[in-house]
Amino acid sequence: MKTAPNAHRDEGGFVLPWLALMLIVLVAMAGFGVDVWNWWYSAQKVQRAADAGALAGVPLMPDLNAATAKAQQLVVQNGFSNATAAQGAKQNQLVVTVSTNVSNYFTSLLGVSTTKISRSATAEYNAPIQMGSPVGHLGNDPENGATDQHWLNIGAPGVDKQTGDRFADYANCNTVSAYQCPSGTNLEYLDGTYVYTVDIPTVPSGGVDIQAYDPEYADGNANAQCDNQWLSGAQLTTLQNQNGGATYPDATTRYAGGRTNYCPGDDNTNLGSTAQATAWLVRDSSVSQFQALQNPVVSTGGPSASGTGPCAHQFKGYVPNSGTYWFDLLDTTNANGQYDSDFAKAFHRYYTLCHVTTPGRYFIQVRASVPFSAAQQNNPTYLSKSETPPEDTSIGGQNRYSVRVANTGTNTVTPGSAAYAVTRLPVYTNTTGSFTPSFYLARMLPGGGTAGRILVLEFYDIGDVSGGTTTLTVQPPAGSSATCSQWTFNGNNANPPPSGSTISGCSMSGITPNNYPNGNNGVLVDVRIQVPGSYTCNVSDPNACWFKIQMSYTNGTQANDTTTWGASIGGDPVRLVK
Image 1 (cartoon, rainbow, N blue to C red):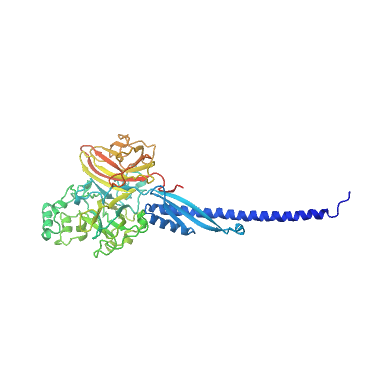
Image 2: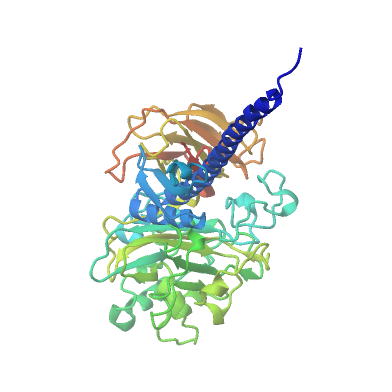
């Protein structure tokens, strides 16, 4: 059979158009694939920007304006500018949405030149828990009759950690029982040491003074008896009559020896050749509302002679060397040439660390690791310098004090203000006999990511007092069904309670000063509390929503108890929830 002469030509005419059509389809698919990949890739970058913005901004909630500004800053750093922020389902949640228009390649040929990509992220933040006080003073306020049976405490680098200060003491751990203190060195030592938060929502016309009571270290003898060559009756009378009674009008009570309400009980633990110099700095919150040490020291209103310098000051330590030592420091006539105006303004008195006229959040930082320098007493740079490890581990003594916020020129605690600790609260309890003081421990607010989670409470070296035993009881807020689900000793779930101690619900009884496993000396006790999902309280009442701690001392107990408390919500404080 003969083949038609044009058969191959006809087949060629079919293949070429077919290939051309297929090429168009393949090019279209490739172009569309490029656009799809570009959409996917851009969406990943947008999502990361939204995540970063939400995580950065949420710690500032419920201040939505501040949170939005911070979120937008991070979004811009990630390459985008079109971002919005809103409160989530809870007041501690922030929703950040980032949008961008992506240029198209192939689909632009079809009239779609750009595609809008939007992604959202929701972050949640559990702020550090308020500890210790619902009002504008933390610790005893003897001038207002508020003797809460406890002071605040700071030890020095040379003090033995097993005396109760978990984070300020560095050396001289002389037993293996002290938690995280092998070979005589405290592994939990913190250079910044203790920080207290001060919230001042409104400022009266005269301003507000951020103060510390008895901020200097003055050796009051062993066991904080306040009787280390203290002022005699004649000396007290002389002081009270000086300047017509204007300078020390209540000297006979304020400076009396022994355990009065005015004596905080500084003691000479591990005191050798060097007494602690206590440094105080007040920082604003211009950089961070919660990371205190990221903020600068307030630049004016400090305790320098002019009153216009920075809010930073260091007190030298005072150790008596004669029977007239304390009198000589206070004697305004300077008869023996030893009058010390710095001491006179601070000893058993409130000392103004910083005068402020602007409402907001401030932070009080206290340190005992920086060696004393008379030339650098008001220098924030020197007082903030790193001391890890401490350059002088021979510094001894423990300083007790309290802090408050008062209207300038008065003893009136500023209404609506708050002074409290977060995360770390060093406490000194000075009581005698059968007594059951109850302290504000940790405030948990509902609706802020806490309900249904675990509250972790930490007690270091608590209740190990002489002459008897102690019972520790955690008291949930009224009406709460929160339960203590687990007790842990020295960070190990397998460790049993010290011998003689009994655990029952939220109570631990039979606490003694012996070394572990026979007692609680230097022991870290963790209590995990399951907070029910239905947890609620009266947020508008500053005295509500508090978990408290009650210490029950048996008759005959002598409580000179230095201890360190902690409180936190289990899990990451900042996290993405959507």
